[in-house]
Length: 476
Image 1 (cartoon, rainbow, N blue to C red):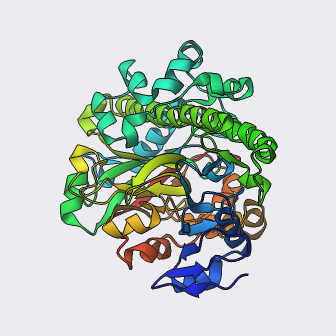
Image 2: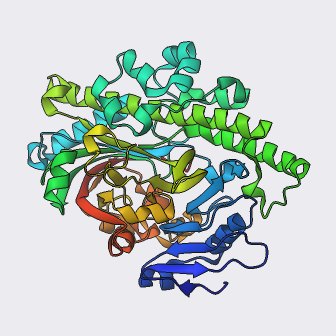
């Protein structure tokens, strides 16, 4: 591993050298640095730092682990005029993201029988697992182009959600520039996975607010101690995966025609303003909008599940959307007066208080940043502090793996998983299918959150604890 020099508390630097055009900064506390930093993920950040047009620095998040091209937990900013765009640096699951619903219920309002009924009612409406298709085939087939080009606003117009939801979705649930003509037939054929959660680390979780750290901000976010909550974590499913696969191959083929030397196949890149670059941006926007629709549709199904179980209108339980935040995107942004294209792979946008692009309701605090832990462990709601401008208004998206899926299945037993889950209810009886998602396969969420909290990049607002988790079998 190259020399990583301390660059302040919880931060390490690799000075640019050789073919690198930028430094690398990695944010980890001491225990994460000494125990869980992989050689491969460091090399992937260095590879990204060697691309043309990259802005200094390339950044690794506290949840960093190796991925395809750019590591998961990697942030790479490119000059908007002279830089490159890389499908692999965005990721396979474009706009994988998480949304949080509040309620006026407490955990005590749900005994295990009712909790199990709720889980079954949600599962009845929301297919889970790799390759599972939607229960809304006819509507999707008739409206697919409009859904992926116009996003969540169109879906809500059709009755799948509340108009107020749009105020609490990043970008109000739609990215401009989407053009389905830029998307392959193979990707479109996987569009029937809309309104499903998939497998891997995706989930729907019923939990509660265990701790409030910042009472004033929590009140603005609509959170109170003891509140029953719903977390929804999923993305663009096979549609986004196919778009990444298609354009990675296309960019690899086109790179030599632009005299681009690629450090790895996973970082296949083309100029942002090239024909292929523009086409990818149009296709990526379709996947981003698909994912916003996916989480919106699932939200509607979750609300309907509550209504079915309790026999009353879902609004009786509030179930207001607190926020929906994306990761795995490339966005044009201006920071410090410089226009750039920011690739966030396994990283989320984090706007501090008073930033003009915050939703109006969160202008004074900065928008909620939702950081899920692993199955059976805590999740966090945090807010950004002004220091995040140094790392492109970005923070980590989760806990981060320490064991590969294959290693987790070998090293963790069903009994180990049962012990770690304790009283957390998990959908399905085959726990062996979820060994690769066991808490032991992930970093300690407390260490990951503290890495940024200790240096005032973020402030903790609330910690959530799970009661029941719906997961699908297989790995997306």
